[in-house]
Image 1: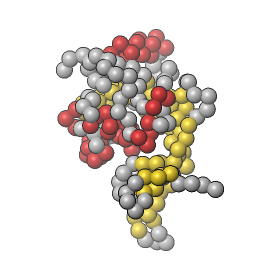
Image 2: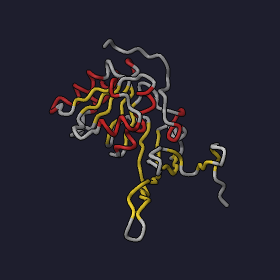
Image 3: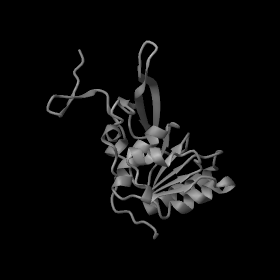
Length: 209
């Protein structure tokens, strides 16, 4: 693989999340911190991966490739480095030279100088960094709250859908943005829970009194 060049400012982003992010989607050359949610991560990876973006996963040996494929991640453009050891930051920086998106879970806090060097490399290559956990100099932080599972009745049934609140806090917005999402719904799709389908299959916003 050859080093990537910056072609555009935004990566394809799932519509349920795009409106919450500053700029309307994942920006090339920027870093984002996420709650440690596999479903949220795979939702963010699916759209750019399906559009041809290479994705690298560093330091996540439990990352489920079958689940990722189910969410729409192209496994032919996915590179896993499950055990980078003490060299996790160097591996992350090296992969950033050739990948469109790099995901990492830092085992410990990086120094300010290391973070600054990595940020410069991301901007130069146009690579997007997704960090599970806190990270300095992030474009935005995505967090989950009010998680509710659906499908269990009175002593019967099975978990079939999960509804959560996704909140995005950014450096540029004056206040956080939040939305209720199905992650996933009963049909295993990710979508806004304040959007319903009419009989013709069109989406429409629910109105609240």
